[in-house]
Length: 141
Image 1 (cartoon, rainbow, N blue to C red):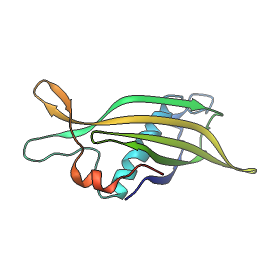
Image 2 (image 1 turned 60 degrees about the vertical axis):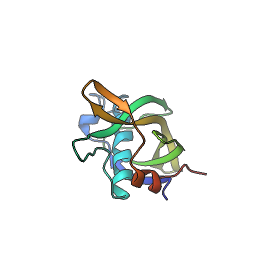
Image 3 (image 1 turned 135 degrees about the vertical axis):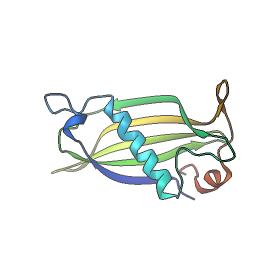
């Protein structure tokens, strides 16, 4: 069972403001990209369905704290950790780690709670995550 995953990603100019500093909301996009990569590393997608059902992961809460800015062409390591797993929800923490001449430094940290949902005629409803996903992911100890 997996409880964490790491990947590297470069800050592109489109992620920044005109000063070359990463726009604050794009940290959330980076958190989603590592979440999706984590699922793919386990052989899953964050969106699926069969027999006419469509399911995915809706955001219940999201937060971010920033220690220092990321800049254009910085290569950041994204380290996602499963903090908590329930039958219908997963809470992740993502650490943004930058290599410096003084070693690796945490520049930001974000948390997302995602709820497994199924599309219905009226919108969405929370459902238990697929059994194979539940079996493959565990909370970090």
